[in-house]
Length: 385
Image (cartoon, rainbow, N blue to C red; front, side):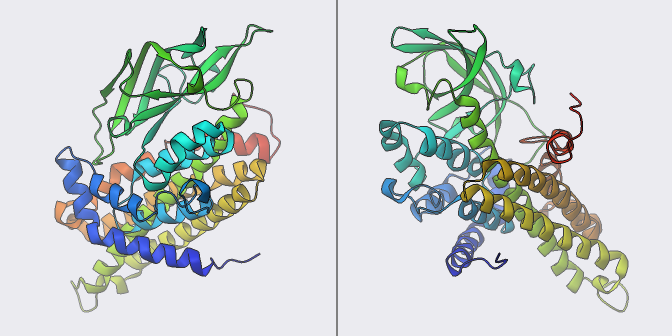
């Protein structure tokens, strides 16, 4: 086992970092506070091939794995220019379609994922379901050769920037009458599809939406993969989501830590810079350690997933998501504290990270559900819910 990334991966990180620094955190915050988007950064990253590193080469992608895409996500985050939709569009949606889509669906969608020209949101969470996928009420019924989809979704990211949404619905099993999950691509301009922005107290250019699907008519090929295997297909997308969420969090933590270290080296109040004081140095050192540990677990999860071991990848991805969420919160808190009052001044760009880092404990899966998973599947304890 090697703990050193390949030269190609390291070169990818360096190139992505250069792109991120070209725009910088000020660009992202300016777009967020003005109600704008990071469209220019997304488009340039797409043209350079960074958003499609995990798409098969035959469809215009880089032919790499989720580990490569996670490296892109992390390095953008480390420059203060994290792109939230990377967690969804190229990671969940492109992965599911590449693994389970028909040949026609792959030809239709994957080239757009490869160059970033296609953005696809992902919709699973519902107002009354939360983490309990068994309570999903969005349903699809047959309509001749097509489908009619109805239901509601909530906290769906980046719908306003997406051409379509991969919606998790449920269909009725003809033999048992029970509802089973299924995945449908729904164009955002489809009749009966509406979305409204959810006001949030988070400084981000990536917005959250509630979705309303009122008898949305879809063609037969809107169904992705097999109607009878959607649960397996769903988890094939959720493991990359957790890996990417970890990368997003680690990158954000690295950005905050770098800002804090630079400030601690140069800010002098007494005889020595404040970084010489253990009360300042130790929290930053602890943040460094915990970010590195989270990154290692993220890389392990990515290696397992790219190696085809979905079960082991699921455990590692959940652990990585937990570790990264805890680490980034501590890193941002330590960075703000290091700056004192300046930590909340807009000039220093750290205050905007407080809400964003806290969100990593909640989404895309809460720390409590991860602890439930580890208790049950890793430790063999009785199911608690």
